[in-house]
Image (cartoon, rainbow, N blue to C red; front, side):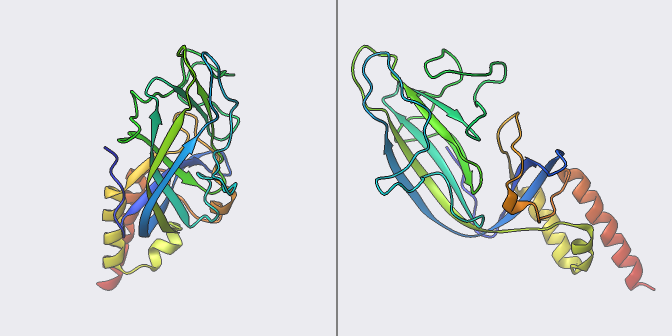
Length: 234
């Protein structure tokens, strides 16, 4: 079962920063609303497949590509029929669900998700959509009959505020706010975007200051709090 983020909570994403270093970028969920879309691939005859494609609705709106950096989609992706194989690239030139193969082709016996893994009406395949990261999907029919692969995409749409967690910004915060921020970071859900192959940070986030790890961030906060306490006692 997918656990969604409550309003007011932090959400973190691992990305490669512009210097190719792994960093965590945080945002705060301001409010949320339901997100529900059904998508159907073209019909597939026995042992046939689609090409990799960007998912879009009848009005050609890209389903998993938010238009602004302040929108984040947090969804589960359910699959029907249960035996159909769904392959994914994210971004559109990097294969997912396989850490030892490259150049995956749709129909391969590895690197896919089925409805047995993520049922159509009770999806467990969790996905976060952020502006600037384009996922593509493909389907393969391993059966002996014609089918129409379908995806049930349901979850929450978040409106978020991205945070700059530079030393200077932290030092400007009152001690009470800094303590709350540290507690929020400790409780935050942190997503490794792209799995074991991290994705470069989207260009719209490059002006925000990330952290190198939760542990180092908490150490820095503790140091600043001690400095604030020492300064106030003088």
